[in-house]
Image 1 (cartoon, rainbow over the protein chains, first blue to last red):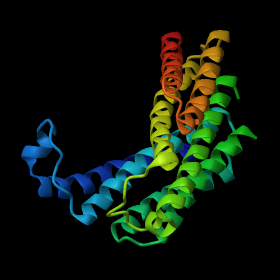
Image 2 (cartoon, each protein chain N blue to C red):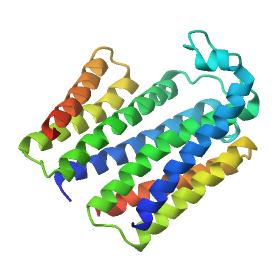
Image 3 (tube, chains in turn cyan, orange):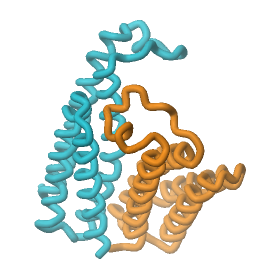
Image 4 (cartoon, helix red, strand yellow):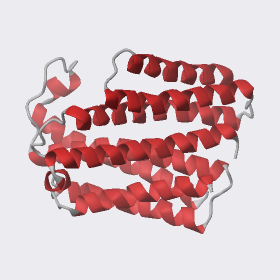
Length: 130
Length: 128
């Protein structure tokens, strides 16, 4: 398996971890009657940290879609190399750090970390097109 | 790199541009400190920033549906003039979609969304 694909698989596992880390406190706060129900009514507000974990998870869904696309295009086009591998690891590292940075409310570091993952994805896509 | 794959990469770049535009518009509205903070009490975005936010979310969903169709065509070696046309239609419709969303033209935006969705569905049918 190429480094890019390994980073992609680990990013997928990271998202499963993020879902769990959010779902456990969310269930505790909202109660299983609401979370397991049809969710017709709006839920009561989540605690600040749980809200942050939810926003971090939702943001990673977007990041993951773009990263999946970048890894696939780079892999299928045969443009994978040391540079795209480094981009993959930067993305994974940034997305791991993003979760505690969001939960702790580290400003502006959360945004800086987000930008690192974002531009790593962009660099991979550009590398595939060149 | 086959043309459909190039179109997929180009659309990925477009979505990245839209995300950047959305961040800049949101920063203009709520200020960089609020954006870089933990967003516990973020006010809803309005105007152009709100439109870019909604257009960006819809673009990501479209990307998630389009990418597997292109990969199926690629993996199965089913690339043809039709799959290329479907991918080109998708790209054109989705780029215009964001522009029209920001301008705020009703119905035309819906029409472009439908065009992008139909192009994606067509690609899946061609891949089966």
